[in-house]
Structures are given as C-alpha cells and as structure tokens.
Image (tube, rainbow, N blue to C red):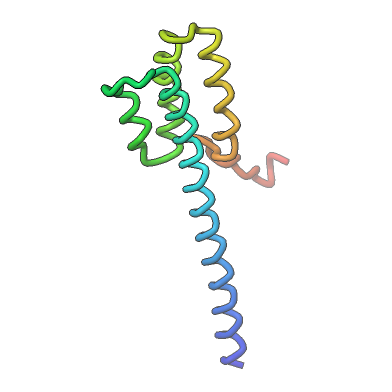
Length: 117
C-alpha cells in the first residue's frame, strides 16, 4: 500500500510541477510580447534616433507585466508628442489585450461566510 501512495503522490507532484512550469513559461511569453509591442511603438516614432528616451529603458528592463502596465502612460506621453493624442491613445489602447489575462493588482474575491449566503 505504501508503494501505491508514493506513486500517486509522485504523479500528483509531477502534474503540479508541469502546470507551474507551463504557467511560468506562458507568463514570460506574455511579458515579452507586451514588451516587444511597446518597444515597437516607441521605435516607430524614434525615426532612427540614436539617443533613446528614458522610457525605452524602463520598458526594456521591466521585470514583470505589472511594471509594463504602468509604463503605458509614459509610452502614451511620447507617442502623443510625435503622433498627436488621438492617434497615440488608439495605439496604446491596442496594447490592452496583451495585459487582460494577467489580473493586475486584483485580489481574488473573498469567500462568503455561511451566514452571509
């Protein structure tokens, strides 16, 4: 019986480990996709300039998706100068689907107590 429990436990652990690794890889992939899209927007307005604005570095070296989410306003400011506010807002709004799955800053809903139901 001890063999069956240990085999079951090891199978369960391997399933959980694979899921976490897949989730981490998917999160990294989404982070890189968002980063690339933001850098592409910035490079469109750079017109071959060698000196990059500070926002470029913030986006390039952001460690997580939440940081990138907050740097959207910085990207919007630079795009507004070069493209106008309406066009810049449309381009930055197009980035939003890249962030939708990440549950930024949201806490899971609290479980209701039995007396509240």
